[in-house]
Structures are given as C-alpha cells and as structure tokens.
Image (cartoon, rainbow, N blue to C red; front, side, top):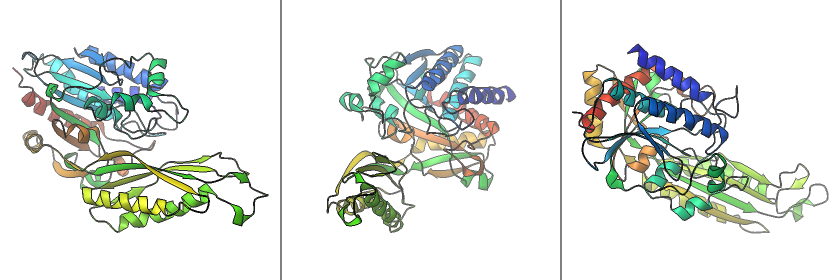
Length: 409
C-alpha cells in the first residue's frame, strides 16, 4: 500500500520540523513550544481519522474509536513524542505515526470494533526535561503519584504544572487510569541497535525488555579560588565525581546478561573557569536482562559513592527510576508472528536493550512490541533513520492483530 508509506513519510517529516534545534536534530522537550506544535499536529490527524480526542492531566493524548460493547476496555496502540536533546526524528514519533496509520486503515475500511481502539501519544518517555523517564505511562498506571508529579521540576526550577500551564494544558484533568479500561497495549519502535539491519530482517518481535535503574549522585565539596587555594586544602566536588565515574564501568563488567552502566548527564556548580567546583550532580543509568544484576550494581554504586564521603566531601545517591526486566505477552507475540507469516513478512525474535512505555504497561495489561531496523544501528542522534517500507510492514501487521484484539465486526 504505497499510499500508507507516503503518508508515513509525510507524518515523520512534519513532526520532525517541530524542533528547538533546526538542522541539528530533534530537540522536543515535554511541555515546550515544540511539544505544543507536535501535539496539535497529532490531534489534528486523530480527528481526520475519525477518532475522539482527549488529553489527561499529564498531557498524554488519546484518540478513541468507540466499540459496540458498552464500557469495554480499550486496545491501546502508540508511543511517545518527546525527544532527547539533538536526537532523531524516529525515536517515539515513528510509533505514534504507525498507530495513526492503523487507525487510518480502520477509518478507510469503515471498521467497527467491539472493543474500543485508542491511539495514544505519551509525554516525557525520555526523561530529558523532568528526569526519571517514562513519565506519561507511569502516570497513567498510577506509578507516579499526583504529589510526585507536582514536585517534579526541570533544571530551570520550572515545575510540571507551571510548564503545562504555559502551553495551555490542564493539569487538573484526570490522571491515573483504571487498568480495567485497558485490554492491551501495543507499541512499534525503532530498534535503536544494529541487529535487524545486520540480519536484513524488517521486523523484530520483542520478547523482553531490560530492567532499568536511574540513579542521581550528588557530590558536595567547598568552592574556592582556583589560584589561591592550595591543592592540599581543596574539597573539589568535580575531581571526586570524576574518580567515582571512572570506576563505574568495572561494576557492570563483573555482571552477566549484558549488564551496562552509563553516566550520561553531568552538571557542575557554580561552573566557573576559575572556581573550584562546590557541587557536582551526575546520573548513573544501569540496565540488565536480569533483575539480580541490576540490584547488585545498584548496591556497588552506592558503596563506591559513599566511600568518598570524607575530607570535606559529602556524597548522596537518589534513585529516580527502577523498573524490573519485563517479558512481553506471549499470546500477542504468537499473534504477531502468525500475522508476519500470513503476510509473508520476514521477522525474528529480539530483546530490547532500551526501555519503553510498553514495559510500564506490561504489569497492568497484555503488552507487546514490534521493532523495525535502525540504519547503522544509530539512535539518539540526528543521523537516526528508519525505512518507511519497514514502518508500513509494521502497520499492516499491527492492523491485522488489532482487528483480532478488538474483535472487529
């Protein structure tokens, strides 16, 4: 269906233009001007495809096709639409676009489901602005409380509610959703790795998603003049943080199941060229296919960090996120594989090394994912790219599976 492929390309191109860094990748922070532009586009397309549009108190977007069964739970399909700084056009939006096109096929073919179909576009999956990540999905299922949400602030000290109000969103709308209203959640995403491309296979059926923990480490010392403070009189927060960070990789290497550890964000205060750093804050991202490995590394990180709390240095560790490794629903996995075979689309099983909203939903409903290849395995960068043909394959597979799950009449 060439028309579906062409629409996919138009959607991706349109959404990619909503960036704070034109020509330097996609930077679309939650509740920003670019967020508002993207959500306006998504809502407009939802309405064009005959969906009833609503938002919740987090700013998540829902486009609903009602079913014939009264008060029946919905089959949800979608992904997120925020980005990392200077990221790509496909991480998140590709899944939202695929969901829109599934709804588009329902609309074109005038299908009426028994169970409602809902296209969803989720906020703050990346955690770029408010930290932690997966905020939209965690909020929907109640893993992020009203109080916790209100207390979240960005690096400028702007709260979630203030940021929402600035772009005209209503934070007082209902937030948590009763799990009984959700029959299943499906998500298409780019792989963000090299496996599918190397195998020359267009579709990956995700079996499991790694466990993820995000720690925030704060090292506090004493500011001082760079020229007049002797070396043996210094409590340098940055030097101490550097010593800690340099030892982190070894903590992951000692574990199995592809355990990895990353320091991705580092902030230095007061950040002056001629001032000894008084405080340094950095993140520690820990991932593994087995929960015991994640827990082991968490403890090792805490022990390492606390061992530097001496000689005028104070250290602290805060856990911002902790999600166990998750298996996807076997019944839907079987359905996805069967439809791949019927449609004669090559596929393989794959595990996800990245976190996704599907892992949050998996504790509350039947969840499943499809991956499509990423060119050169690249993601979270301007060079991120996936083939619209592969996205079309995914749309066709998901369309057939969702017809089954919604029991189309």
